[in-house]
Length: 96
Image 1 (spheres, one colour):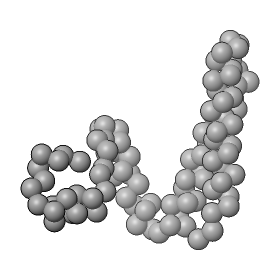
Image 2 (cartoon, rainbow, N blue to C red; image 1 turned 45 degrees about the vertical axis):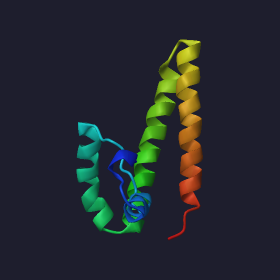
Image 3 (cartoon, rainbow, N blue to C red; image 1 turned 60 degrees about the vertical axis):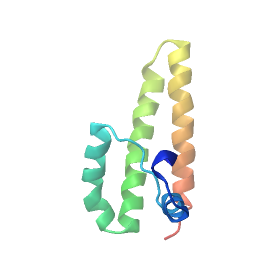
């Protein structure tokens, strides 16, 4: 929030009620555009697509855990794999 641009209490309230969007990279903007069609289909389709993406990431991480030789690399891939598995479990509990 840029306090220098706020001159009235009403502007402060408006700023507080307007969610800030973090700066996006070009890749981030591209992803948003790709997701627009998915999101326009509704929350069930969005949740389904999210689950598919997470499952694909889980598979990729499992392969990398098995293929790595360095202990630190394996730990890094395994740590992320565990986080992704937890996300998958959480998404399974979402009811729409």
